Image (cartoon, rainbow, N blue to C red):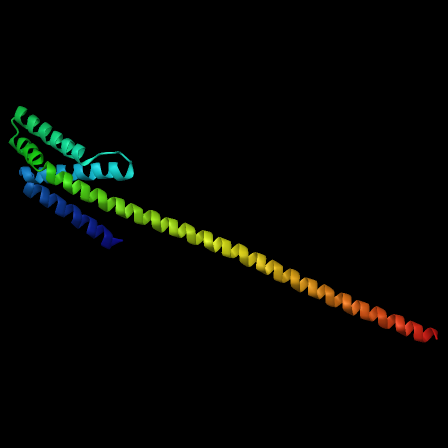
Length: 172
């Protein structure tokens, strides 16, 4: 447990150090905002079934960049303005990356569904095998019981015949 705690602590220390070194750089913020956009759009497309085509993705990313640049101009925040402009100019690249992420997520989801389907099929096959085995065992038990009854009937018939012949010989 302490290894996990150390790893998490180190991870957050790395994030904090990266933030401290880069928080004044527009490219850093463009990368963060672009990544959040890509992940959000990809997750909405794959997991929530939102239909977003490539052109709409470019439009959304460009609009976000334009809004950031506009707010940066109004508030005289050069970092925000530059971040928005970077996002706008990189919108095609970001949209292409989003498509790649969507494809990878869709492929992963298909593999998971196939694995679940295979597991379900395997479970069904095992269940049907168990049913067949149960019927087979029941049939075998019935056959054993039938042959046991037949043997008993034969021995009973034989003993009855012997008893009858003994009675006849004693009577004579």
